[in-house]
Length: 427
Image (cartoon, rainbow, N blue to C red; front, side, top):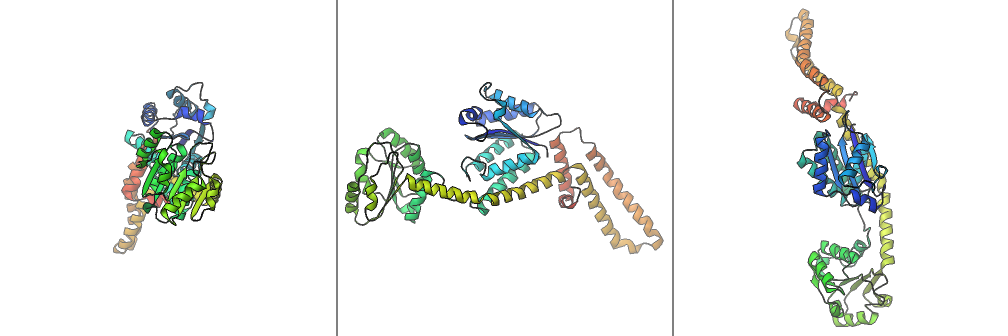
């Protein structure tokens, strides 16, 4: 299989190295156009915070992989900062399997990552628009998308929260069946609070309040998640109206005590209050958990959830690998069937099947002494019909691999011989 993958990821280089080879959409367009101009017929690239990967369909006269690595480094003016050894190279089936593992989310820093599939799709879409994704890349990436979809529907590799922020929201869902009828208060506006608020909005929380010691930061987060800003000085009054409280700010004292929570509950009667303290140091007085109808969870609880979910995801890897092996076999079979000899064999068999079928229907119309001649004449007719296509197929080595694959594919579709070439042992 004429496939090459060149990339950099969290497995081969630290963040301060791989961020130097992060390509924006505009930069990706430039590098794909450059590679096409120097004779690389098909290529696709995608770039995320954890990886940049380039897939190319190789030709006999193509640049060596080390030179392509150099082009990537030069394009980002990263000479002396990124070494060739920081990038990896995979070829043929290994490269295809790697792409399928990436799309399935099992090569990600977070096992079962659901975002990577969309990022791979964006890279392929860009290559399609630029005309650098031909018949081979189209087949390769469509199978990668299929693998990613199958993995997410047939396994539990993406189930369970594997971040503290999402674990907090997942816990809230277990306490309250219908979040769109509940109100949540997020205390803080840093990264953890931001993620928690984003997950709550994604779960269609009814009302979402945001408060922070720096009002400006609270307003920015509230605008992002369509929440309502509450002045930090009004924190205690807002608790009265909240069903869920998630706190993540840096303080050296408890911002909510057991007394504060008891006052809030008296105002609202016997309501259930769900509190998650993900601040370091802790933001909520641990004595709060002794109050009736109040559920208090801290980082230790959430980390245990995350660890258990990661363990469950890890147990799904064999199922994921089995799906990837199936899809890889499909790609290998398709690619092999488009080679010259299997296509010629399938075309010849297709014509011979028609000849034998028609001969069987009509042979009794001929005199027994003429039947051998009919057999000979019909074979000669078939051979003459397929002679020119066979010669053209065998003499097409001067064209690019993409053109040859397109030619084989066109013949298979025209004569409907894809299944025959699959069944042929020479494929």
